[in-house]
Amino acid sequence: MKLKILFFKNYRTYLFNPFGGLKEEELEHVFVPVLEIEKLVEIIRNGPPSIIEFVGKMGRGKTTHLIFLQKFFPDTKIQLLEKGELFFPETETGLLFIDSIGEVPFLKRIKLYRDSKVTIVFSTHFSRRAESAFFRKPFFSFRVKGLTSERLKIILEKRIELAASKSYDGVIFTNEIADFLVNKYNDDLRSILRFLYLKFETESPKK
Image (tube, rainbow, N blue to C red; front, side, top):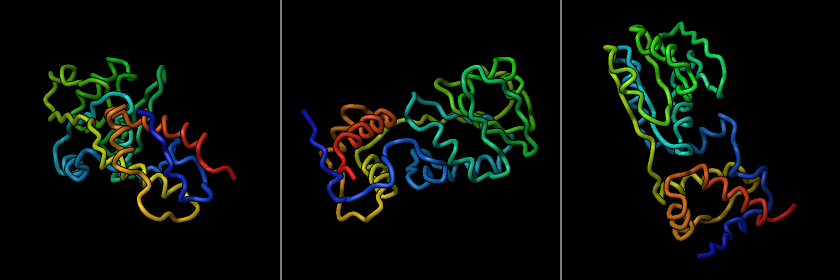
């Protein structure tokens, strides 16, 4: 099936390609969570020091959930790690947010798990339950996965609304388009956005 995308016709101009990277304040506008954020906030605020992991494949939204959750705790910075980057955790709040904890050396990860005064919230491609099993801290694992056509439509329409310099009339993404994208890419939102980014670059009206 060759998908003909015509949902840009309701706009005359765009501020930017809506399917590319967004600033944090823009990301909040289009975020549609899979997890219950209120439940996570409750665990962190009222529970004992814990280990909380977001598990999932690349492109499923682990980092986005982590960034959004951190906004409820503005006194705590989020550690966004790149491969090979040195890691020196500092916390005065008893709370750490770490993206890609696999980039933290093993012995330093163990030290974090062992610290009985610190709650650590992190993203990972696979569960770290076995690593932390020897330490008596509550462990919570949340798998970030799944993407329905309905949720995808909401996310994409929010992105279009954010990028459009003029309002649009009606629904831009039909059920057929959303179903096609979910069937083709499953819940890999990153790949869906990459596909639409290229489509936008080649099919959108030129100024």
